Image: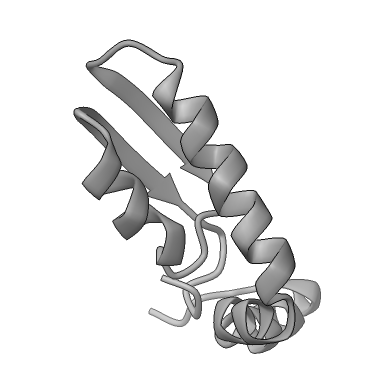
Length: 83
């Protein structure tokens, strides 16, 4: 069965596949601040946590979250190129 995708989804998939790596390399200071703020926020919550990450991309932050929390993490993304 051939998957029918909207033309915009194909374009999104084209850019999404490599987005996370480019973001981290290009915006290291922004990424560092985001990561710090995320972990500060997670530290204020009581376990077990249940996290739903909509737009998780390839999971670059998921691995770090999984190491920091006690609980469950589910990531979803509309781009098969990201996953």
